[in-house]
Length: 125
Image (cartoon, rainbow, N blue to C red):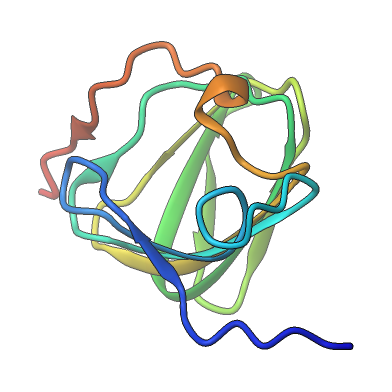
């Protein structure tokens, strides 16, 4: 039988970003996939990471930049980007963004492999 998810679980993070997980470890106990809506303020950024999961990111509002070893990718509202497992990436936004992140298998702090847990704040000049 289909299972209704009545609402997301709010996951607290530093740096002013809001994470609302609909499916995943925190919300449904699922470890095969996580689906979360992110709202990142202007100047927000994450540390470099090399996750053990594929991350599919769909930008709904604003824009997001994904740094990689090949250079930055600017993802605008209505666009998406895929970061494959094992790739070196860093996510940030200069103007702010609302986006969905789908991770396969599910996101976990143990498998994201961030270089530093401090959130970077970028000057949105």
